[in-house]
Image (cartoon, rainbow, N blue to C red; front, side):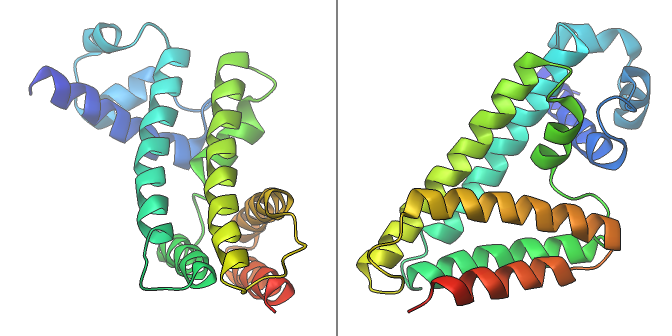
Length: 193
């Protein structure tokens, strides 16, 4: 396996294992075994488990943001239609695994915010990026007359992110997408003119 392939394989497996077990219950040894990578290889790519966690977050955020940008950039739909399409796609993804894994960024935020300042800071940056994307789309919805002109789109975007993360947590606990569908119905219903 080429050097880049090995690193990517470790990050891919790390993402899956962090989603399944969390950061603290994911040992480097189990990640190496699942990735079928020799034990000594880990430190060729990562200086520590925390560095590995940071790179897992970065890789996940990059992939997730590309998908988010794809949905929110879909010019054939109205801005609220873009947001709806995005959230429906995530609901379908979570439903496909019976809501077991949730959101990596949300999960790690709950687990690691008090344990690693490095990870906490990066997780908050990721959330801020998502809020900005939501706010930009909500501003376009405002300009299109889909939502009231007096709404503060930045505050609304913050509310949507916070509410969505709470709904994902509830969906994991209840093992149903009902909290996610309620989120979507309530948020779209509350803002539409």
